[in-house]
Length: 190
Image (cartoon, rainbow, N blue to C red; front, top):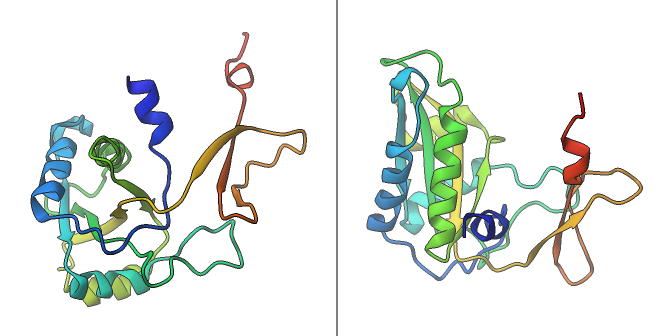
């Protein structure tokens, strides 16, 4: 079952914007992150929830979407995320988040997938503008933004081809293709 969940849990970048996600669902996803492992058990991550169009409109312009798709500026109106979770490091607890943000984000995204939602972990964003837009105090460092919604695109995994390119791409029908290295190429025989 976890195998299918992980295969289904892709980086979705286009959503049915009109499908709302309520605050309770977002809190349940953050609870999964809360229960996940934490370096030295410091639990230094904090979160800002956004599921209202007005607040979402403060977050969306700060995000950079799909670096390999140079001719695409992100989701169009009607395909934007319907919710966000902004992940922060609480510097009052620690100056180092270790690996916590990756573990927490994976827990959140797997939980979203289980709920029939999809998301995208975004580390490329204008931190200063986001801090200003959301009035984030200096003691919190923005780490990631998780865009969430009901996926409006098909994402397929495929074996890395002979070119060796790991760059994802979209075909003429808008299907998002994600090359993955072969399992045998990942395991060293030492």
